[in-house]
Length: 126
Image 1 (cartoon, rainbow, N blue to C red):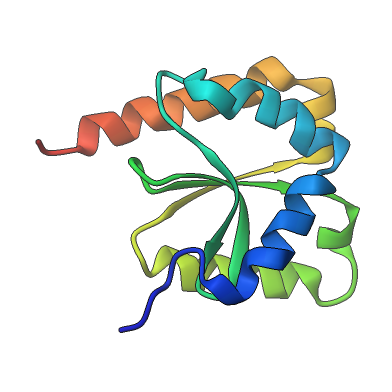
Image 2: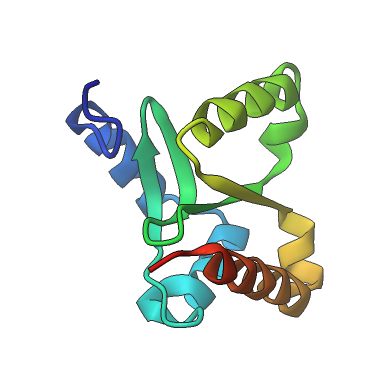
């Protein structure tokens, strides 16, 4: 099997996405960066196969997606389901939040992420 994480062919696209983060992504990133979330390192715009995940913690195999308006137009919802299933085949766990959730209930979003981390920590074998 070839390389699946951060393929070189996606470097320019990932860099562009990092430079053009949405407001909701920027708000959430301000809470995830620098190991602020229970000491875990998150990466932003992380490549898995030909897909790009908004935020990813390799240690926990936890992906966090922030869904803006484009995720609800046309075929986007069906495409998101396929994309998520493809990525979950690698044992990666998904959390999805909508922009409005981050704007209106950031503490609730952070609580949900913390609870998922606690659950994943409990499932780890050392």
